[in-house]
Image 1 (cartoon, one colour):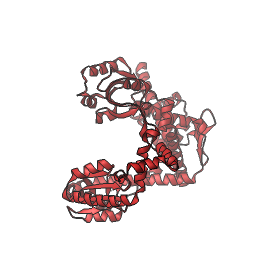
Image 2 (cartoon, rainbow, N blue to C red; image 1 turned 90 degrees about the vertical axis):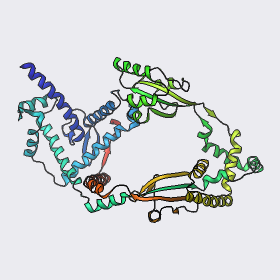
Image 3 (cartoon, rainbow, N blue to C red; image 1 turned 135 degrees about the horizontal axis):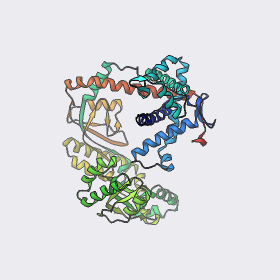
Image 4 (spheres, rainbow, N blue to C red; image 1 turned 60 degrees about the vertical axis):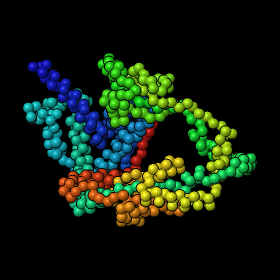
Length: 494
């Protein structure tokens, strides 16, 4: 019997510790019961955030990220890069603002309300009944007295009352119906966008003009500046294009698993194997592809192996702080360093091309006419070849809805939107200004969903938009409160 009670108590204490950690992150006014240093990491209108409160919240957040990274401990540098300390402090400041607002608005939580809340917590029940001895023993085991825990609960209930205000904002069904109608009005378009300056490389410049520009002492600074601006283009570190398969953990089980994968993986099936086996969440979607990277981007153990391999090779399992990796090097680029003398004629040509304004204007007009004709006739191959040559944008069978009014990440201005959505299929619309070629052709018009499907989704959309609006309102009010509040931070204690 004693053993059973002890086991039950141990389980309860573990659960309670978890509850306390969560409470410490969410609840405020914790400093009233701070046991230890009287210093505070911050204060909000005189309400302190204690060192203990901050460190408990920070510990919880770090543990969360540790679990995401496969259980490996985070370094101080990683915490700094991710801004975890500032994020935790900002969250605590926001919670203090909410509680201070609750006090100003007269939100009172009575002792009876607090007691009822605690009595209903399953953590303190035996046979579905509140057990006062279990309650006191659990608090004592964790260094608390009932008054301290009751204050935490009171603050949590105050916070919830304020949060309820943010969630009562309603979005009308008619508004949502209009939004869905606009979202459902979809165009399929083709288009092209080219800036005036991107046409500069097509402007003719003679060898004599280049020679004269380079030999003119007055242009020396301009060449020096152009070389400095393009330093990354002319001076490149060695790069590797690689993929990997990650198995998290550093125990024998993880090593056994990665060895089994290594035995069957090859260059042809690497991507498919990575999608199936890797424990890197990103790698599951892209076949473990890491793209191109230079030294300093990956952890040292990983880089040492990757940069020593030849294209087409697959490494033996490599152990890092994240687990075991199998690395597949697809390609490599040698380091490159070009001096100013070796590129000064290229820079001179670019400078001269940009100065030939009249030639650029003529070229812009003639290319716009060619592209308009090609778009109207559906000659997308011609447009694609041209955009690659001048670093332009090509839109092929892109869907645009009247609500987002966005073409490849660029939102249409009201007049542009009116032109596009009132155009007929096959019509080419010119959205460009004097310095840009911007042509759009409407391929077809239609609705993405039928009315029955829209009606089905209406209720869900109302809820989603209400939540989104409530979040925006909450963020706006918290910012306004934060701007007016007196917030003092002691960063030396972070």
